[in-house]
Length: 135
Image (cartoon, rainbow, N blue to C red; front, side, top):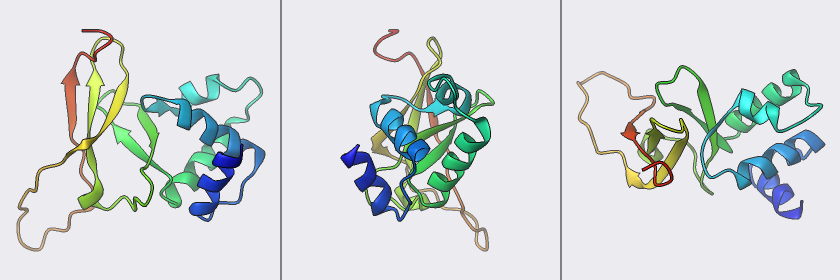
């Protein structure tokens, strides 16, 4: 759990038992995960505590949310040093077969010129198809 503690401390998050467990689970995930999927991995998890943990992680930019078009928000760890600015955001890939959503951190979102006096607050680019496991 030392690595998990370091990750939390780098983002100025006080390590609690639930926070350490959630970071551990997110580190092992190869794809984004919903609140429900995360809760299912903990037998006696209190949903309110889990929700507050995710909210804290979002506020400290340890995780980011993904709207993959399924109607369920998913979460994934941010890369080290990420502050979730639009310029740092990346694309995601949603598998239409297994329903998993992956961060494509090497695929930058293309620069898009927006109209004058518009303020960009976020970008969501989701590619859809079949992942390597389902193809």
